[in-house]
Image 1 (cartoon, rainbow, N blue to C red):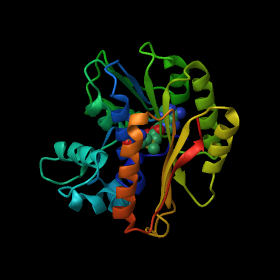
Image 2 (image 1 turned 30 degrees about the vertical axis):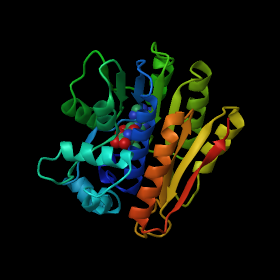
Image 3 (image 1 turned 135 degrees about the horizontal axis):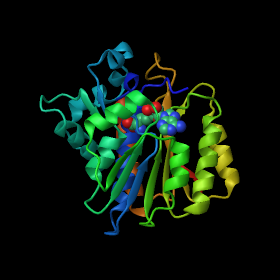
Image 4 (image 1 turned 90 degrees about the horizontal axis):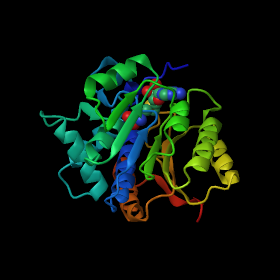
Length: 281
Ligand SMILES: C[S@@+](CC[C@H](N)C(=O)[O-])C[C@H]1O[C@@H](n2cnc3c(N)ncnc32)[C@H](O)[C@@H]1O
């Protein structure tokens, strides 16, 4: 286990959707001034080098950020513009090779009274986190198991929280493991906003995640999905999605705009989008 390295995939079509929608969700939670706790449970290294051998091996970023970057100065939805701005701020040369991951996004969005914990168990990924960020009282870097961290850190003292679950799905039963972790965490912290990323692969195992969550009794689960259909025939993963438990009401309009824009621009209109309730209120 733990052989997965996200740098091989960084910036691909799934990362684009993931980071833009995650930003929309966080922004939707900022309508209140109250402090927020954010947990990036599967953080990876925070910032990826797209000029590295790993990233250049399959150039997956060509299916995502590489395709969208030329449009950075065009009019785009708020969530997309925020993401372009974040990338631009880390690349003085006007490129995108220093590519921000989920921790970089959450770190940038954190207000001075919020707290962020980022965790990764992989020694190399964790070292990357430590190299890229300076931990402090409000920002902790944890080399620990995400499932244990969920148990230990929830419910947060702030009583408001965003939990981002972005596992590598290296083992088949991880879909069910994630569902179980969300159900357990929801029992202790029912008002938390849980954002769960999933890939669309030929085996279709994401339906196991869906079925377990549907059976759990948890209400208010939004499904945001982009299947790029056959836009990227060299990739096994045709698309990806996110399930959002308790999506902030304020985020839903932004999510819709981001999803439609990303779908249109990444797949030239061939993508199949889903924005609906897996489980309604
Ligand atoms: C898909 S990557 C995360 C990408 C990152 N969230 C982003 O968007 O930039 C998944 C990460 O989870 C880590 N991981 C896998 N199993 C873990 C576990 N049980 N606890 C903590 N980290 C784990 C892997 O080392 C890998 O870096």
